[in-house]
Structures are given as C-alpha cells and as structure tokens.
Length: 355
Image (cartoon, rainbow, N blue to C red; front, side, top):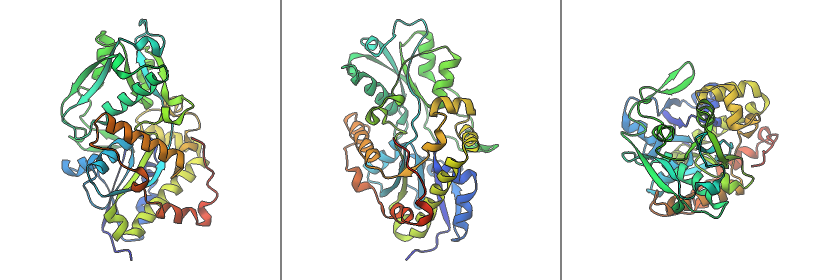
C-alpha cells in the first residue's frame, strides 16, 4: 500500500525529456498535488549536497531523467535505484576540427592530438566519458582505436554542482558557471589540439560560430550502438525507496511523463519552443541538433534495442574504468510501473518511433 509522501525531488538534464515538459507545463506538480505531494527541483536547491544528488542519486524519494552516465555510475556505486523508463532522442555528436586542418576524414585522426575535458574533482566526469565514447565509436568504424591518437587533457576546477541552477524566464540556467568552460574548444582554436568532441545544440552552434569542420557525426549513424552515448538512451530512474513505499507517486510521475510526450507529438511548434528553452538555444538550432521531428522522438519506453544499447554503454564505462565493474541492465529495470500504464486504454494510442 502506498504511503503519503510530502516531497518528490526531481532533476533533469538540459536536454529533451518528457519530465522536462511535464514540469514546464505544470502537469507533474498538479498530478502529484492530488496525492498531497509537492514537487521540488533538486538542481535549484541551495544545499550543494542536495544538488550533487543529480549525479550520485543519494537523495531519497527522487527522480532523475537525463544522461545515463551519472545514473549508471550511481548504480555501480551501490545506490538502490531502478530504471522505470528509457527515452531515445538522437542528437548531434560531432568530432570537430579547424577549417584549415588537414583532417578531412576519421582516418586522418590517426596520430593527431585530441582534446578531452578533465573534471578531476567531480564524482563522475560525464563530459570526459561521453567524449571518449564518441571518439571510440567514430574510430571503430574505420579500424582505429583511441590509442592511435594522442590525448590532451584540459583540467576543469570544481564540480558540476558548485552553484545552483536558477529558473530564468522558464529556462534552467547555471548561474556563475560560465567561467572556464569550453577549454578544449579554446585549445582547438589555439592549435594545441587537432580535434575535439561536442554534442547537442551547443555543438552545432559553436561549430557554426567558429567555422569548424565536422569530421563525423556519430549521432546520425544508422547503427544504434554507434549512436549510443550519454543521451542515447536517457534513463528515467527513481530510488527503490520511492517504488517500495510510494508506488502511487512513482506511477503518477511516470504518467505525467507519458502525457507530456503524447502532447509533444501533437504539438510540434510548442515542443520545439520548449526544447529551445530547455537547451538555452533557439528552435533553429534544436532542429539542427535533434532533427525537425524532435517532437516525435520524446518517447519513454523499455525497448529491447534501447536496453541493449544501455548495456553496451555500461560495458564501455567499465572498460574505461569510469565505473568499478559492469552490471546487468535488465536487473536494474523495473517494468511494472510502465507496463501498468501502457495497459491503460489512454496510453494505447501512443505510436512508437523507431530508434
């Protein structure tokens, strides 16, 4: 039997997610208010330990929808969490070089210098992991390995949650965290390295602004395992305490996510404007980074292909020692909340989108 819950803590990354839409539209707050539960943003908390739960999932009765690396890391560290949904919204994943570079293909990367972020003080450096994943996936298509390049580290100070996120005109903004960002990009422009990895709307905007050449976009490759990275798929994860003691809250929040995604598929213009706010960008760059059909790709499910891609990614993180050991993704998943909702007539008209 579900017990009353005073507060549900939520967090999401500044990327396309159904949870983000549910929050921006106020549906999550309204639906949970009917259960006597208020909703509070974890990343906007004044307490850094609370904000850090965005990465380590230590805060009880919380939900996180976003990049899979922190969720995987937290699970590998022994956090009692369960995945109740996976969403897959393909995005630009670019290996970039300077316009005057002699690098015109992936093969030309051999022996070159590749710039990588290095957040040594962070519990889990997801930026480094996703850059290495994009690089490795690009290289394997042409029989190369990461060891064929010279890796150059760019050290960042502090952590990803040193300062709270503030909501500015509906846009989550990391206040005061702009100092010292894009160090590897600066290194590329100065000629210290020959190529870097960037993804999402910031990647396509920066590539355009500095006239950078795209060597490869692994985010548009037909093989889902090549496209698989931090954001493909994204995990919708909750702590096990929430599922055990507050199952009504878990089902309600998942229903709000599905409702938001269903709405998005029917409202492309409004959804693209939401995605622009969420990524602190514009509708144009959202279309470039995520496709003009981005509204159709907001779909939380538990498809076998997404599960297999997530398992492959877990093994990658273990091989590169971002996590201590691999684990079985299928054992991490709890299908009951999603299966119950999809069995309801109101959810049956949701059409799937191929990965």
